[in-house]
Amino acid sequence: MFSLGETESIEGVQIYAFNDEGEMLSAWRLFVIQMDPDILTGFNVLGFDLPYLLQRAHGLSPDFGYTTHSA
Image 1: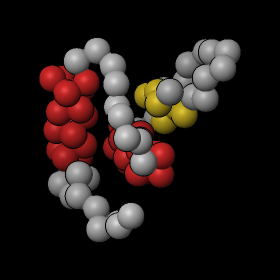
Image 2: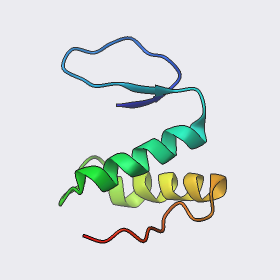
Image 3: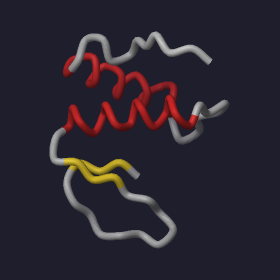
Image 4: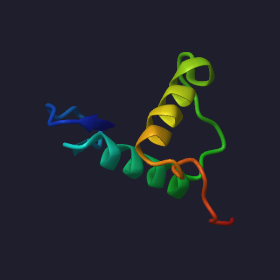
């Protein structure tokens, strides 16, 4: 779980806490790149979550959504 600010521990959950939104989103981006998921699932992930996260991240760092890494 990526959290803005400290949070209580949750059994069985790795928590990554950040004080800065830009740092949190950059760490989340690297996490997704490293995990290289085939599927992202959740409630309304494509209709809201991903577009919102990418828009916020782009506002903080215009090159956020682009990478030159190759498989």
